[in-house]
Length: 193
Image: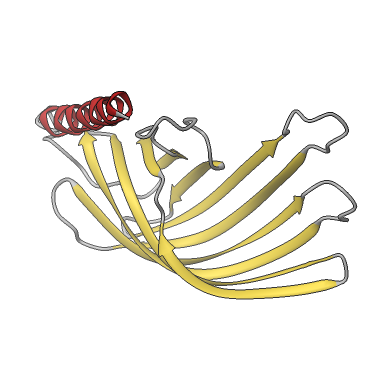
Protein backbone atom coordinates (compact mmCIF):
# COMPACT_ATOMS: atom_id res chain seq x y z
CA UNK A 1 0.00 0.00 0.00
CA UNK A 2 2.95 2.34 0.68
CA UNK A 3 4.25 1.79 -2.86
CA UNK A 4 0.83 2.69 -4.24
CA UNK A 5 0.80 5.91 -2.17
CA UNK A 6 4.30 6.76 -3.40
CA UNK A 7 3.22 6.22 -7.03
CA UNK A 8 0.18 8.46 -6.55
CA UNK A 9 2.39 11.15 -4.99
CA UNK A 10 4.85 10.87 -7.92
CA UNK A 11 2.02 11.35 -10.39
CA UNK A 12 0.67 14.30 -8.41
CA UNK A 13 4.12 15.87 -8.30
CA UNK A 14 4.49 15.38 -12.06
CA UNK A 15 1.10 17.02 -12.65
CA UNK A 16 2.04 20.01 -10.45
CA UNK A 17 5.37 20.34 -12.30
CA UNK A 18 3.58 20.33 -15.67
CA UNK A 19 1.09 22.97 -14.52
CA UNK A 20 3.94 25.09 -13.13
CA UNK A 21 5.82 24.78 -16.41
CA UNK A 22 2.68 25.83 -18.29
CA UNK A 23 2.34 28.99 -16.23
CA UNK A 24 6.06 29.72 -16.54
CA UNK A 25 5.84 29.25 -20.32
CA UNK A 26 2.95 31.68 -20.40
CA UNK A 27 5.49 34.50 -20.09
CA UNK A 28 6.56 34.04 -23.72
CA UNK A 29 6.14 37.23 -25.77
CA UNK A 30 6.03 37.89 -29.50
CA UNK A 31 6.26 41.06 -31.56
CA UNK A 32 2.46 41.24 -31.40
CA UNK A 33 2.46 40.94 -27.58
CA UNK A 34 1.92 38.05 -25.23
CA UNK A 35 -1.54 37.13 -26.47
CA UNK A 36 -4.10 38.07 -29.05
CA UNK A 37 -7.66 36.79 -28.88
CA UNK A 38 -8.89 34.57 -31.70
CA UNK A 39 -10.39 36.67 -34.45
CA UNK A 40 -12.53 36.39 -37.54
CA UNK A 41 -11.34 33.75 -39.99
CA UNK A 42 -9.10 31.89 -37.52
CA UNK A 43 -9.39 28.14 -36.98
CA UNK A 44 -8.63 26.26 -33.77
CA UNK A 45 -8.28 22.53 -33.15
CA UNK A 46 -8.40 20.75 -29.81
CA UNK A 47 -8.42 17.29 -28.35
CA UNK A 48 -9.60 16.02 -25.00
CA UNK A 49 -8.15 13.19 -22.96
CA UNK A 50 -8.13 11.87 -19.42
CA UNK A 51 -4.81 12.65 -17.67
CA UNK A 52 -3.16 9.56 -16.20
CA UNK A 53 -2.87 10.62 -12.56
CA UNK A 54 -3.90 7.41 -10.86
CA UNK A 55 -2.39 4.64 -12.97
CA UNK A 56 -5.32 4.19 -15.38
CA UNK A 57 -4.93 4.20 -19.14
CA UNK A 58 -4.38 7.65 -20.65
CA UNK A 59 -7.38 7.29 -22.96
CA UNK A 60 -9.61 5.35 -20.54
CA UNK A 61 -12.58 7.44 -21.60
CA UNK A 62 -13.50 8.51 -25.08
CA UNK A 63 -11.14 10.69 -27.06
CA UNK A 64 -12.73 13.77 -28.62
CA UNK A 65 -11.45 16.01 -31.39
CA UNK A 66 -12.97 19.45 -31.99
CA UNK A 67 -12.55 22.18 -34.62
CA UNK A 68 -13.60 25.80 -34.12
CA UNK A 69 -14.00 28.30 -36.96
CA UNK A 70 -14.29 31.93 -35.85
CA UNK A 71 -16.97 33.70 -37.91
CA UNK A 72 -16.27 36.99 -36.10
CA UNK A 73 -14.15 38.18 -33.17
CA UNK A 74 -16.88 37.11 -30.74
CA UNK A 75 -18.58 34.12 -32.43
CA UNK A 76 -17.30 30.68 -33.41
CA UNK A 77 -18.87 27.59 -34.95
CA UNK A 78 -17.59 24.27 -33.63
CA UNK A 79 -17.69 20.70 -34.90
CA UNK A 80 -16.72 17.71 -32.76
CA UNK A 81 -16.28 13.98 -33.17
CA UNK A 82 -15.63 11.31 -30.57
CA UNK A 83 -15.05 7.58 -30.73
CA UNK A 84 -14.77 4.86 -28.11
CA UNK A 85 -13.96 1.26 -29.10
CA UNK A 86 -13.42 -1.60 -26.64
CA UNK A 87 -12.88 -5.34 -26.72
CA UNK A 88 -12.69 -7.27 -23.46
CA UNK A 89 -10.44 -9.94 -24.96
CA UNK A 90 -12.75 -12.68 -23.73
CA UNK A 91 -13.36 -15.34 -26.34
CA UNK A 92 -16.78 -15.13 -28.06
CA UNK A 93 -17.39 -11.63 -26.70
CA UNK A 94 -18.36 -8.80 -29.01
CA UNK A 95 -16.45 -5.60 -29.56
CA UNK A 96 -18.33 -2.53 -28.35
CA UNK A 97 -18.16 0.94 -29.80
CA UNK A 98 -19.85 4.28 -29.75
CA UNK A 99 -19.30 7.47 -31.67
CA UNK A 100 -20.85 10.90 -31.81
CA UNK A 101 -20.81 13.99 -33.99
CA UNK A 102 -21.57 17.44 -32.63
CA UNK A 103 -22.20 20.99 -33.81
CA UNK A 104 -22.39 24.16 -31.74
CA UNK A 105 -22.15 27.94 -31.57
CA UNK A 106 -19.80 29.71 -29.14
CA UNK A 107 -20.22 33.34 -28.06
CA UNK A 108 -16.89 34.66 -26.78
CA UNK A 109 -16.82 37.27 -24.03
CA UNK A 110 -14.23 39.94 -23.21
CA UNK A 111 -12.23 37.78 -20.77
CA UNK A 112 -8.66 38.84 -19.97
CA UNK A 113 -5.35 38.95 -21.82
CA UNK A 114 -4.74 35.18 -21.67
CA UNK A 115 -8.22 34.00 -20.64
CA UNK A 116 -10.84 33.47 -23.34
CA UNK A 117 -14.30 32.90 -21.81
CA UNK A 118 -17.37 31.84 -23.76
CA UNK A 119 -20.90 30.49 -23.58
CA UNK A 120 -22.83 28.61 -26.20
CA UNK A 121 -25.26 25.96 -27.28
CA UNK A 122 -25.05 22.88 -29.42
CA UNK A 123 -26.39 19.54 -30.46
CA UNK A 124 -25.06 16.05 -31.12
CA UNK A 125 -26.05 12.78 -32.71
CA UNK A 126 -24.60 9.49 -31.51
CA UNK A 127 -24.70 5.76 -32.11
CA UNK A 128 -23.63 3.01 -29.70
CA UNK A 129 -23.41 -0.75 -30.12
CA UNK A 130 -22.76 -2.58 -26.86
CA UNK A 131 -22.45 -5.99 -28.50
CA UNK A 132 -24.40 -9.11 -27.62
CA UNK A 133 -28.02 -9.25 -28.70
CA UNK A 134 -28.34 -5.47 -28.68
CA UNK A 135 -29.37 -3.74 -31.91
CA UNK A 136 -27.50 -0.61 -30.89
CA UNK A 137 -28.89 2.75 -29.83
CA UNK A 138 -29.27 6.01 -31.72
CA UNK A 139 -29.20 9.18 -29.66
CA UNK A 140 -29.64 12.93 -30.07
CA UNK A 141 -28.84 15.64 -27.60
CA UNK A 142 -28.86 19.41 -27.16
CA UNK A 143 -27.46 21.60 -24.46
CA UNK A 144 -25.93 24.85 -23.27
CA UNK A 145 -22.41 25.33 -21.96
CA UNK A 146 -19.92 27.81 -20.55
CA UNK A 147 -16.18 27.47 -20.77
CA UNK A 148 -12.77 29.06 -20.57
CA UNK A 149 -9.52 28.64 -22.44
CA UNK A 150 -6.23 29.75 -20.88
CA UNK A 151 -3.49 30.48 -23.40
CA UNK A 152 -0.21 29.01 -22.14
CA UNK A 153 1.54 30.23 -25.31
CA UNK A 154 0.39 32.75 -27.94
CA UNK A 155 -1.61 30.15 -29.94
CA UNK A 156 -1.84 27.13 -27.60
CA UNK A 157 -4.37 26.74 -24.78
CA UNK A 158 -5.76 24.45 -22.10
CA UNK A 159 -9.38 24.67 -21.03
CA UNK A 160 -12.41 23.47 -19.12
CA UNK A 161 -16.11 23.46 -19.92
CA UNK A 162 -19.34 22.96 -17.98
CA UNK A 163 -22.70 22.24 -19.53
CA UNK A 164 -26.31 21.25 -19.07
CA UNK A 165 -28.25 19.29 -21.64
CA UNK A 166 -31.08 17.03 -22.69
CA UNK A 167 -30.46 13.68 -24.38
CA UNK A 168 -32.79 11.13 -25.94
CA UNK A 169 -31.68 7.62 -26.96
CA UNK A 170 -33.62 4.86 -28.65
CA UNK A 171 -32.68 1.24 -29.22
CA UNK A 172 -34.03 -2.29 -28.71
CA UNK A 173 -37.60 -0.93 -28.63
CA UNK A 174 -36.72 1.25 -25.63
CA UNK A 175 -36.57 5.05 -25.59
CA UNK A 176 -34.72 6.72 -22.75
CA UNK A 177 -34.10 10.37 -21.98
CA UNK A 178 -32.02 12.35 -19.53
CA UNK A 179 -31.53 15.92 -18.37
CA UNK A 180 -28.15 16.44 -16.77
CA UNK A 181 -25.24 18.78 -16.31
CA UNK A 182 -21.63 18.49 -15.43
CA UNK A 183 -18.04 19.54 -15.74
CA UNK A 184 -15.95 18.20 -18.57
CA UNK A 185 -13.37 16.36 -16.47
CA UNK A 186 -11.08 15.75 -19.39
CA UNK A 187 -8.03 17.80 -20.18
CA UNK A 188 -8.62 20.04 -23.20
CA UNK A 189 -5.57 21.05 -25.19
CA UNK A 190 -5.85 23.12 -28.33
CA UNK A 191 -4.02 25.30 -30.80
CA UNK A 192 -4.90 27.98 -33.34
CA UNK A 193 -3.66 28.13 -36.88
